[in-house]
Image (cartoon, rainbow, N blue to C red; front, side, top):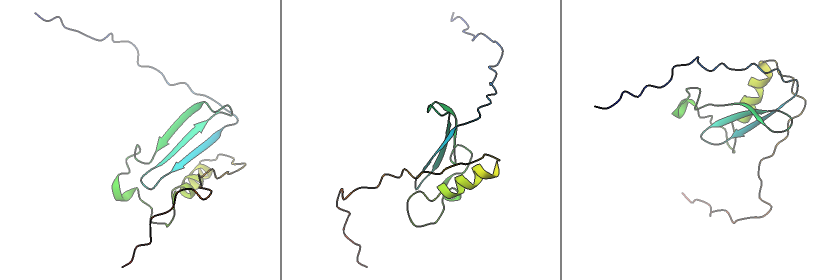
Length: 108
């Protein structure tokens, strides 16, 4: 007979409330998703969230604006609306300095 394997039922793990006076918000906006990561000044991750993880799937998640990272302005606005005091916004988008040759133009 197979022994019944039961997991030890302990108390559910409790979430800690952290009061951090300073921090950084890193926003990674791609064509398919937008990920916001909150870190302390040293760069240790405190919390993170994404549009896909909050229930937005498919076309409801897309924003039709030309150019990469169209969800970053909306993410900044939502951070301001929650009451966070934003002191600086730094764009760290990787831009090639004459790197790879782009594909040829499409002719229709």
